[in-house]
Length: 170
Image 1 (spheres, one colour):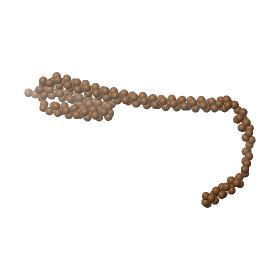
Image 2 (cartoon, rainbow, N blue to C red):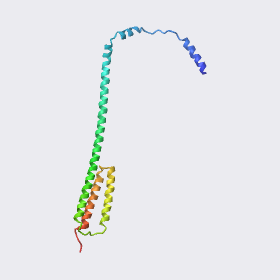
Image 3 (tube, rainbow, N blue to C red):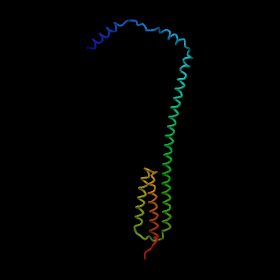
């Protein structure tokens, strides 16, 4: 069937339809009732629906605000904890440096009993720097913090043992 034949058949069916169609019941009673009803009655009927929609909107805004504020508070707490961890690491490093410097100054005149102690100290310093670098990515890692503290302690013990051994063999 071509497009032209389809249009001709459609037109014949449209022409065969009755020109007027009567409703199955009287519609004027409903129309009169709707026209006679006052606008205030219509508003009163819609009022509970408006209150419900308003209450739902307020609840939605409150829930979204609560979740948003919780996310902000949680994010802020994480930033604060990160800053505190970084401050703790910096304070621990500064404290170690002060202890190491004061120990070296106190033992400056004493002879060292080994020749390669400075190389060992440098290796421990490299280890501390590697741990600090790892702590930049995970500043709250307790294992890394303990490792850094241990390396710092080993540096101080090395300086003390090299300059003042407990037992001198004769």
